Length: 159
Image (cartoon, rainbow, N blue to C red; front, side, top):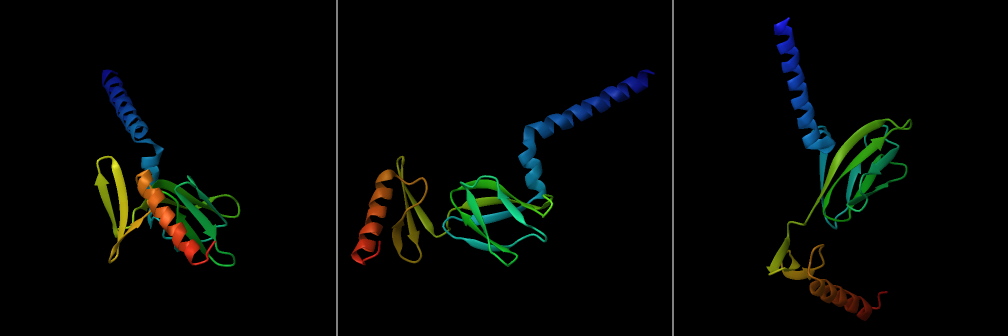
């Protein structure tokens, strides 16, 4: 009888440890291990094939990425909106999950980041360095760069 008690106590301790570990890592960690990772580059849309039988696609945080289904095809366009991670779930006609992915949005590899104290500027160096607008840049850099883009467009008659 004593041995059974120790076994149950040890088993319960193991179950408690597994539960504590699951709670500590959270559902996102468990979810990401079985999900496909899609890495998007900010400001660059990507065309991907939909999972088989997918009728609906849901983006967890549309502030990070957006999806557009291409009519009469089995393709979609993923458009990154800001840096970060979110999930994407594909559902069939009956609302059952037919696929899930983690979406990660990263900066372009050709960007150069200049850090001056707390102020940050982004430059696209492919092959010559020119200022670009990127999330996290200093307000002065953003307004100067956007002002130049708008002035150039106005000089060319664009609205």
